[in-house]
Length: 316
Picture: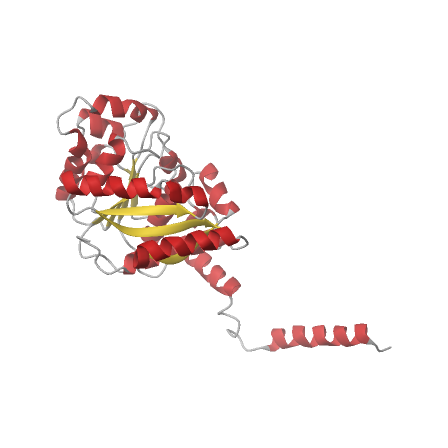
């Protein structure tokens, strides 16, 4: 029996046979093969080594607009950098403690946390915890006590530089830190100011939607104010476009506008909307360990590679 259906069946059969008999490794460069290879490397606890910076890079991950992927970006970039053989520390300055949750670091009320460091002057080393399952990654957690820190800091001496002094003292005792990522609250209060005074670089995640652009000008002005009065080396070094939906024209327009304004400071990698990225914190994990072969994990891994390969961005 012959006909269009029979011809189509023969073509499918030929395709299957050709795939089954092709030389081993011929399909290793497909997206699925690359994702599987990356997932295997992550589960083994190590991806290809990333270049080590000449000195510790301290980045504050900041955007006063909520819901732009700030905490998600902080923890997943930190995990990706650590999996690349670098020594990374996350400082959770958000009273919600979402970064601590995503990293699997316990932070119930009463846990030694960044609050004790900022308000009570405790050494940073006394609150830092190693992150389970990711060698080379540590974190200083946030607790709900941090919610009152904005008010308590007002009356303290050198209130804007308390995090800087604690971090400098911590780094004097150890010289193996490659990256410090500071997760800021979605506001421009004293906690965020402390983060900007302690850092040299500002890393801005921007959601690919119109509203995300509205507060960007104010954030840039605040960076300029801190730079002028408190921390001259501070500068915006990196911008990452998050929650990108390739199906919408608006996402592409926002991406183009940001790239036009900020140029090479915008990473080429786009972070897509991903269910896996959203699910991971509920299991106390980053997406890098929760589903290392997912589109979100692969995108954050590529963003980490770009960040690590940037030209020395100091003093921009």
